[in-house]
Length: 270
Image (cartoon, rainbow, N blue to C red; front, side, top):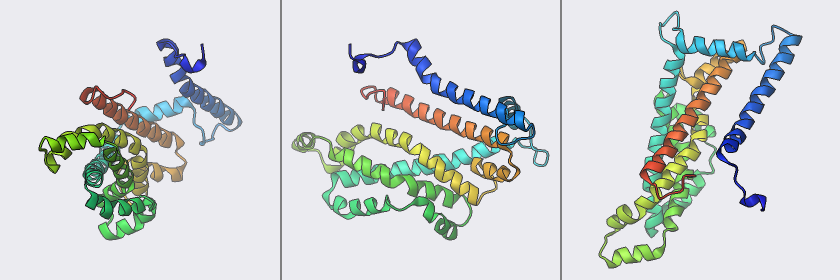
C-alpha cells in the first residue's frame, strides 16, 4: 500500500502530534543546562524549573503597589483589544465581501481599492494611527482592523463569486430579491469561510496588537514583554510568550468547535 493512502492509528497520531513539542522542550532543556553549567548566572536560557516558578508567581502573586495580579490584568486588556479588533474586522469583511461578490457596481468600485489596501504594510501606519487617534485604545484596535480586514475581504468576496451561478438564477426565478439572495443563498455558504478566515488571521492580529502595545501602552501582554526585556528577565518573557500561545490556541480551538457545531456539513478541518 502506498504511503499516501495510509493513516496512523489514533495513539500513533497523538504521539506524532506531540513529538515536535517534546523535541523542542528537550532541546531547550539541554541548551539551558549547557549554558547554566558554564555560567550559573546566565539569563538567556533559564532552567525550566525557574520558568515554572516564575509562572506560578505571575499567576498568583499580586503586585505590591497596585494589589492586582498583573498577568491577569494584562491578559484582560489585550483580549479586549484583540476581540474588539477581530470582531470589527470580521463584520466589515463580511459586509464588503458580500457587496463585492454579489454586486457588479460594488465590485468595480471597491475590489481594486481593497486589493491596494491589502498591500500596505500595517505596521508602517502605526505612527499615523497614534497621531490621528492618540495613544489610547482606538489606535490599537484600528491597527488590527486595517491589518486583517483587506485579506479577509478579498477571500470572502472570491468565495461569493465561486457560488454556482445556477443557484443565483434559480433564486431569482423563484422571485427572490437581491437582499433575499444575499441572506438566504450567499450568507450561509460564506459564514464557515468567515470563521476560517478569522482563525487564519489570529496570528497577524496578535502581531499587530503586541506591536501597538509595545510602542504606546501602560498595560497589556505586549507592553509587559517589552517592559521587562531591559532587565533580561527571560523567565518572565517566556512565561508571557507561552501564555499568549496558549490563549491563541484556545481561541482557535473554540472557533473550530463553533464551526463543527454550527456547520456540521463542513469538513472538520476548516
